[in-house]
Amino acid sequence: MDVFGYLTPYLLDWLNLVVRWLHVITGIAWIGASFYFVWLDNNIRPPAPGSALAARGVSGELWAVHGGGFYNPQKYLVAPAELPKQLHWFKWEAYSTWLSGFALLTIVYYFNAQAMMVDKSVADLSSLQAVAIGIVSLVLGWTVYDLLCRSKLGQHDVAFGVVMYAFLVASAALLGHYLSGRAATIHVGAMIGTIMVANVLMLIIPGQRKMVAAMAAGGKPDPIHGLRAKQRSVHNNYFTLPVLFIMISNHYAMIYHHRHAWAVLAAIMAAGVLIRHFFNLRHRGRIEWRYPLAGVAILLALAVAIAPPPSAAVAASDPVARFVRVQAIITARCTACHADKPTQAGFAAAPAGVELHTPALIHQNAARIYQQAVQTKAMPLANLTGMTDAERAQVAAWYEAGAL
Image: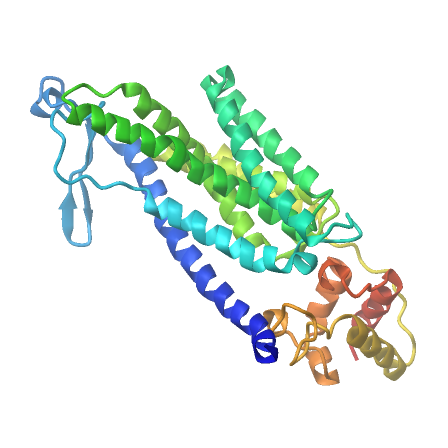
């Protein structure tokens, strides 16, 4: 039992690594397919009136060359006259991405909720309460989105987009009142990812099955299923860049640890949608540089707005005494995690490989310490060890005096 308890953090690290690898692979497969089909849909050209293709019900086709071969994909207005014997369904890419993502969310956050989800300066929650908030947010996100799509608002693309964007921003702000900044941000991403895969599971694939069933029965498929699937696919396309950003944002505390992290996330989501819109228009032959320029301008303005202010700390005159104090602070507040043998539950090795248990290692990682403990105040994680502002000021004074 003691051996198992000792190995548990190490085994969880391996599980984290393998599941994260799987999540990235399946995500590439799903998003790559999504990008390709949106590109394909925007680039196919209608056949000549009266041609054999038009007579067969083909609404558009495209010639392409790749990997030494020529390809000629064709799209039917509703469906072909005869059901093909072999039909590929694009669904497991989406399902596998969500399943591996939820498994990763469980391993990293739910198994270690007190360290990863709870920030007692935000809300003093139990692990169960934090996990419940996270899971409820996923269910609520899909429910609200689906109801909006089915309402009259869903018939007006721009108005729907504005309302959905406002809902996601409000969700980020609300989650930020209960969860740590890191957990709140990742759950907004998980909410968007859940909406995307639920679109596939609950509407796109069932609609396609109804069309296939109608053809198998000798009937004509109802085009409404294709129209609904197209709408949800377009929504998924615009969700892609924001959700990809959130997937990587947890490596950058300046994003999720800002006191207005919801506003930071709102700006980045807006930039992602604008940039994605540029590419969607470009696939149709329209070059609208105002959209990516606006997206880049938003990102630049954000970078300036959240830049950490210069420290007002005053360095002590004796560098030896100054370092002794800083080392004592780091030993008390940081080395529970950042050591060769972490004592903090849930960590088999120092996060990001940063060890601080010797003077040499502290000097080697001085810039990281300054950024994480002073500029962003992201460390200690959820401030589990209770680092004070006065202690952060001493670390700042040490670093700004040359980290001697």
